[in-house]
Image 1 (cartoon, rainbow, N blue to C red):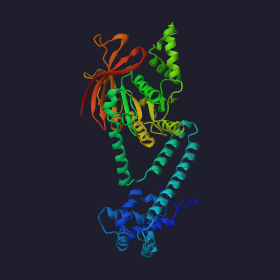
Image 2 (cartoon, rainbow, N blue to C red):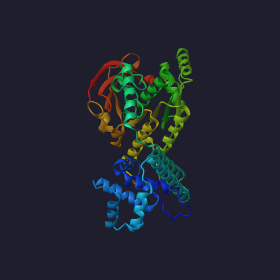
Image 3 (cartoon, rainbow, N blue to C red):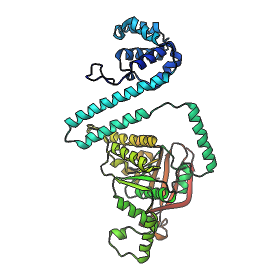
Image 4 (cartoon, helix red, strand yellow):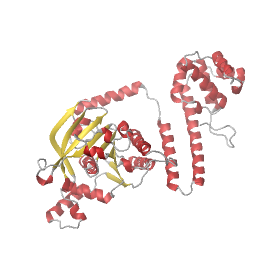
Length: 453
């Protein structure tokens, strides 16, 4: 919202730029007004008179009316607002002040910059007031500040892109896909069937891995993270809201070594062979670019700030979040919000983060109880507490296990069912992975059943 001109200190603005843009609209509405609407709102005009003239021009354009100096004056007069903008003389003065539409984009950018500065000042003023009024709620105040800054940053980053630029990038991507000849376009999952169905972990996508507790979603996420960071050498971030960094590292090392991690936790006798394998595996991941943040009770704004830091400092190519329902919503108040709305805010924040950083964000999620009982396996409706997760996600993988004597194999292996229930840019389908519960490791099976979306 634009501040009043009666402020003690004049807010940032550029009167010349405002008048130039309005003059260009009145001189060439067909060539200018759509460019303005795509990049400006009335709030970008600091001076009230300029704001009213701009609103009137846009309203007339939306109704299919001719936008010219005389018709704008007539519309302002009919609305009883002509004197508010300075009368007929002032409108004519603006219309004839700059009889050129050259460099109008430069002035549009100036208006956006000044409005962004005003937004920063207004947000900072709110934050100062909140800090005085909520001295017993430091975390909530910090969340609100971070959230406002995220909004301001995302607004400043928005820009229109020419179709020429978009088409060029599209051609490059299609050529890359053609050259890959069936290989993942993005990062490899490390699993054949997942790569076949999804074409890899692609930038800007939010991927959800959902399961009931104890089924192995954290194990699968760690296995994928290991394959990206260790086997492909790409840096990744892992936000752990349940387990410590040490516990996660132990799991990865034991999984690679095929050693039961419970032996270490329960202080059991570990054979020399297993110990050697564990040490060998631990050393193999010692320099892996896996960056873990222990984040109990983290809010979505704090998570996004941490992810930005990881991306800036380490250049992470993927982010894992374990798990969505433990991430807290941001901002003060809202204590009466439903749990569904809170989860929806978190889900939207994670999708926005993927698009902002242009990396895949792999999010673990709980399924409700019905998902564990449903004959035929879980479905999208079983995503716990919010349909927004299904809406925001680009890919949803539903994980389940059916242990039976017939399916048990040597080394205590069992079959895990993975169903890609949503795939925004590809087919859906189900397949099996082999799961070794003793050392929490998933490996490829041969079976796959693909159903075109």
